[in-house]
Image 1 (cartoon, rainbow, N blue to C red):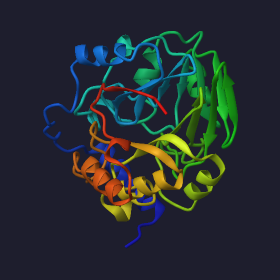
Image 2: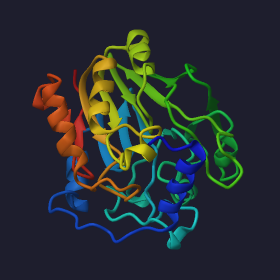
Image 3: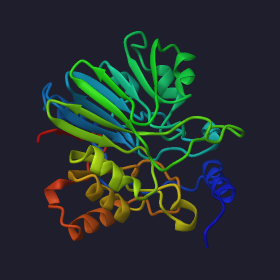
Image 4: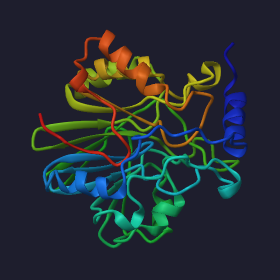
Length: 305
């Protein structure tokens, strides 16, 4: 059964309004604060990526520190404390982040655009914000000066870092009457010959073969792997782990990393099932195990070709 868009959205918002009990978090899923800092410092100032939980990343490339989709607060719901609450804390709290040169947000859903985090981030005077079309005012109203709205395929150059906004198969909504009033996007980050492609949220389609032909190959693709059940509701919104692996192949990715899991319950998907299916599908698709990244929250890895 394929549900109408209206029914799907209503069910999704019901999930945000009526959260269930938090799951039990496996030991080792999240690094201690000391281990997070040791992991980050251990990579020196070289190119690296840190998973902060869900779809939030800290990326160091081209002499810039980039913050991606920073949901670092407690709640991912328009109802705040009455809605969905994360069951695993962020790898770093706002106060523990290094100075941020670039803040990039893929779309306006609450688990990707967290108002508490955006308001609390220091350095608004020098941070460059990259946001999809028509989402810029959200940041300007919260004190950011350099805000750039991007259409699909727009390119921004910041010193040695080049960022290209890419189309995704998703949607936007933050209130009751603003469905798809702002754009959504992914992003290709390039510096020093390294190419990292970040997918915020997306469904699957022929688009990714076309992106692979135009922008591939990439060194690392950050692909969402969670929140895919029930499929009749979620398939038009989110990929499952097998589709995430296929996206990696479509993009001609050397390595793939799963995100959008292990932090907050947004669907009926068993919280710690996605990485198991992701690894199995990647192995079947021919990816070497070392090229399939499943990080612990707060873990940092070097970006090396």
